[in-house]
Image (cartoon, rainbow, N blue to C red; front, side, top):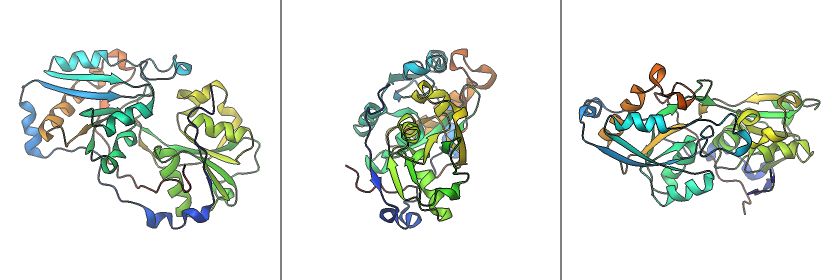
Length: 306
């Protein structure tokens, strides 16, 4: 794996991120909960066709080759079952998140299936109105993920408070669990690292930690099992200092600027109807669940960003 691929390193001092909490931009509820009238309209059986952009960690068509043994999910069974309900979802698969983001900004799709922040952050940036119609369970039937503060197992750093005056690697603003959530956590506790580095992947953050460039790093909770970091980083060589609040891992989001609420409600109910014990085997999990409430707080982009 090429660790400098798509890397943008930005080192800033904490003073450039003063008053983080005050800089938050409050976000609306991201979970879709249709009003009773819209829910009642789901009985309509008129054909539905929606274009959906897909980037899923566990999908064989979008995952990195280095986790091919884990990323075996297919959506063929889901699409076939939905067609029986007169719902056609036209999936376009994206291996690179940046390519999906370009399509989102171009308003090419009615919805997306991906880490929810990938779509939600364009609600204000690109005039979208994405709502999470359903969350998707991972192969272990978990619907959420977190950001992890980690350091090497033999580091003298023992607690999150020990990051005061230390060097920490974070993600970029397009990663909620590696940027917004951990920075807010530190700000809330009054912990001021000496410097912050921003990389574009868990692998790059761990590489910076292993090479001594930083004293600690923030990674996604799936980094040691479902990311390119599995090529070189072993979980037993690290210790976790703290964990952010859980957030949805993967969701189906529909743009309510393009999709009527009644249509979104019908798709939602159809996804629930083919989940649990009825989930197709190729989903490698029990499928779709009701989206939990999530109102993500948002921080500015990294200072001095190129």
